[in-house]
Length: 81
Image 1 (cartoon, helix red, strand yellow):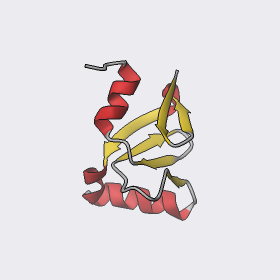
Image 2 (tube, helix red, strand yellow):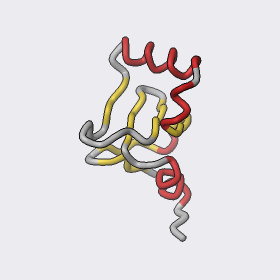
Image 3 (tube, helix red, strand yellow):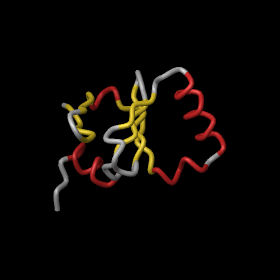
Image 4 (cartoon, one colour):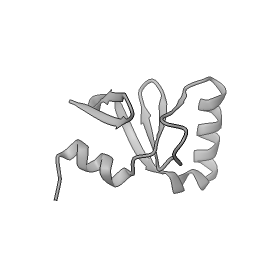
């Protein structure tokens, strides 16, 4: 299955390693990770007009999405209550 991250971006569910809330970025290790990923051009911002709410780490790159972690979780597990 695919996960829609916003705009026209979709990824395979099986390629997702983790989904982080944007507030997690304040961690020193997380900031260093994102700095390294940006340095090698592996960060893709989805819709730069909106503030990023979540980070989706996949096998190939990192996406910054304006869709919340909670909504992405619902999309993955099909929970729409």
